[in-house]
Length: 430
Image (cartoon, rainbow, N blue to C red):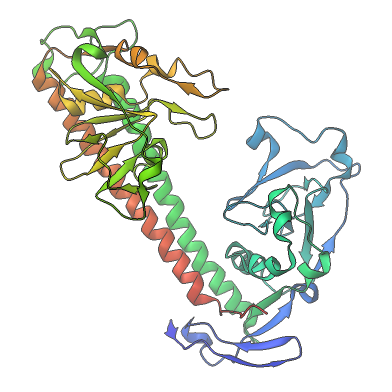
């Protein structure tokens, strides 16, 4: 693949000559790229389901079309089903609902062989007229939010926050679509799509690897810790098989407790301490705020636990382990636990999302764990400090492996994003 400086030639009518930064060698001399309006390449489809048997679909922003049964656990089409818009293979469905990642709505390619359908109230559907562009090529352009960059100037700011966006069909059809020029245009489109598809396959394989490791860890923990009603784990390291039964103790006997403090008035763009709140813990440290205040700080080997969380994305009783070089300030709705007579990392593993604490969660309202309910939480503890350490080391090593593969996954996604920026020319917004 060759490097080429991105250029924008003079506009001639509705078309602009462009060149991507990266181009496959066989297309180096294929000429400049052009732009065509979506309306010249595709036609809006208004065909209704009627008496056809179709799969009712919904959409997940950034992912694509999924069946309503898969997304909601049931079909929600109801009496409006006959008026749903019909989708055939390689049709596109534009969902006019704003999301954080796609504020101007999301366009998905339908790649199934069976007839499908989407609600006509929030979708506009279109299909390619002729042989070009290649559906997968156009799909990758739209995944890169080509339409959003174009449509945002037509959308009133207030319209983004309330359901379906008010998008004029003509504005959508005026979307400029970059295409390779010349007789090899379709082959170059397909080559680009195949390249990005290979990147997607690599990402999907890495996702499966991370998921498999997480599943393995979950199963291993079920074996390494006693199950409800039992006093010994099903799986024990050989040297501890005769170490005796585990003992049930309340958390208050093996750890000290301190409530976090309110840091909201002391938040800074940068500071000596990272503020640990429920969002920080639920994102494994990704969501960060800072402070210079030190009302309650955390030391190495402390366990920090979420005391309350909202129903959506809740992280009730999720824990975070403080490493040697971490400098944290503990926010309200989080507590600091210091292990005593117990291996700190072992405490972290038996306390993280502990079933006894999750039992307080009704799944509906905001749940708050009181100090008393936390300190009374029953824990089954190995009588051997050496066994506690061995279990902690085993699970820590597995966590490190999961982290390494998760970071590799993030690198693959970053590489794909960069690749898309290089393989497609940049079109200046009008």
